[in-house]
Image 1 (tube, rainbow, N blue to C red):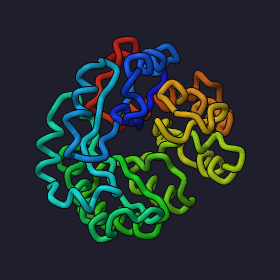
Image 2: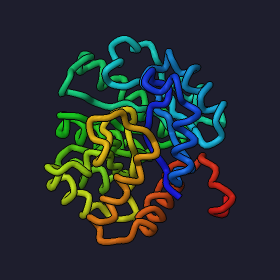
Image 3: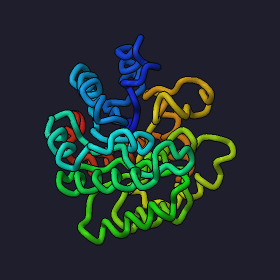
Length: 264
């Protein structure tokens, strides 16, 4: 069994064949998918997908790109919306200095609100970080000092120091199709040094399709290709990396029910 810990099934790319995409994922052994919120104002449409498909669960949160337009989203609202049984995570939230689509102070305020929601609910915070390693590490250090909270550095493509900070503070690190790219030697070296009990895999679909689908629309079934490369990087079999990443997923996403076949 595999888990796609991060995809965007509400995006228009999937509208015409969502059911078929989910079926293909299950056929590839992907038994759980988390479709990730990028706008709280669009949360009802995400929740509708999670309610429609048994293998699909969701998060609630505001992507840093949208932090400027959702400055009214409070910690209290995130906590309230997270009560639904299909909501298993907070986010994605964080810092993105590559595109800078929202003011950086708005991104930081939103991020801290999400951290507070993760701390209060015990649900993992899905963190987006791009070109913001120093500020991200500083906020994580400061906020963890106020009280620990579960989190995952999603679609990891940052520097080694941020991975090490995340792990030190109790976080998990998730790798996407970027790990499979020919020029990702440095990223694979970082992945090899992340403790095995902190590793996850994801697609970030419809983006970042792994080799051999690079340049095409990504989908949850393709997480198997990222897992295969992660296994090769660690020197373990495909079955073993599936077991490692799946066990880690359920340890972090504690609200997610385990399938009966896994003792859930």
